[in-house]
Length: 120
Length: 246
Image (cartoon, rainbow over all chains, first blue to last red; front, side):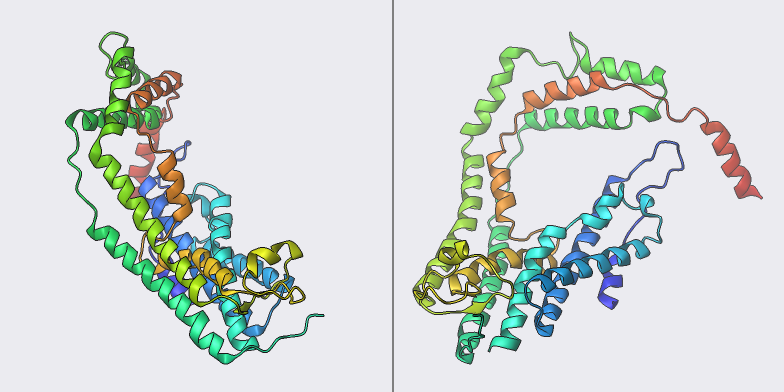
């Protein structure tokens, strides 16, 4: 996943303080969210093309999409060295952000690849 | 009976791929045109001042817990004092700013330009698709849909027994419209994507009203409960420095 690690290479720590009250550097966190969004979009496009080529139809395709999203989430969490709270402010962000946006790109490229390979 | 129709390769070459390519190119073109047409707006002196006051008040509210209570209180009073506090705006002045904002010709022109640059390419492309690419099956969607979508997706195809998965090129256009947003954000960088729905929401909720935000900042500042979050920081600093020295 060379592209994956390239785009994540600029994740910065957004929570440096060791206070009792967590502090977030807004700019770093925005940067992290952008990286997460890009990673998800990229992976959903690639996943769409793979699903189309492999000939998934119907429900199987959506299951594949969830699989790809899960792999992306695991990759992102591993990239954050499992200390998620020092990079984003809640678990939900790193797991669920960009889910729906990626879905449309996934469906587009899935349809495209499926048609090119199987119907024509 | 879901038998696979075999479709002509020419459809793929001359419909699907050109349509996608054209949409990507139009998106890129629109991005550059918007960049070139962005007119520079001379900022109004009073509005900038008010904006900065709001930013200061917001910073105070956000970082309130990091300064001792004795320093926080005079700062808060400075902002929300009834007589000469910065955030206190008499009622008569409140309406003025809003009226000025909406009758400002430059702002209206900008909004119109942005709206037009969004709507015109979409309309043109849609008309082009309808004119040239109607009346035949263009693609097959890999997942099944119910019969209710038939009229929406199969507008040019008049056989009612064809599976709903076989769609016309109009639906391929819409699929591209939504799916290429992600691609645009990757190639054009930094969310300059074709967020038409987001932009429409921005347009409708635009009314930047400085007097109302002043009042809301004042309320927010009044609400803040100060909790001194760094009571033991001298001990912590000592521990950290000791570690460094060792």
